[in-house]
Image (tube, rainbow, N blue to C red; front, top):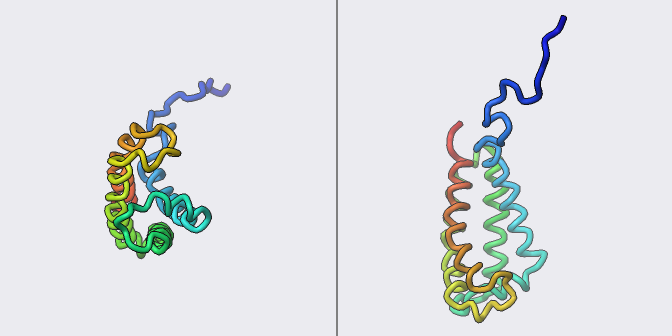
Length: 139
C-alpha cells in the first residue's frame, strides 16, 4: 500500500515563499513598466518634477527611457550587471525630486496620504536600489 501524504509535509518555509532570485527577476519588467508610464501619463510625471529642473517634459521622457533601457537590459544576462548600475544611478538621480516633494507637500495635494506618504516613500528608494542590486548578484 502507498504512504499517506499530508499537504505541506516536508516543505520548508523557502519552498512556499518566492526566492530572492525569483523576486529579483521581476525588477526588469517592473522598471520597463515604470518607464513606459512616463509616456502613457506624462502630465502626472511633469507635475512632480521640481521647479529647479530645466525642461521638465524632457526630464520625464529621459528618465522614462532610462528606466525602460535599464529594465530591458536587466533581463539579459550579458548586460545585467551594467543595467543594474545604470538603474541604481537612475534611482539616485531622481531621488532629489522625491526629497523636494517631501519638503513641499503643499505643491502635491493630490498625492494619496499627503505629507506623511511623501516622507514614508523616501526610504523606498533604498529598497528599490537593494532590489536592483539583488538582481545583479551572482547566483
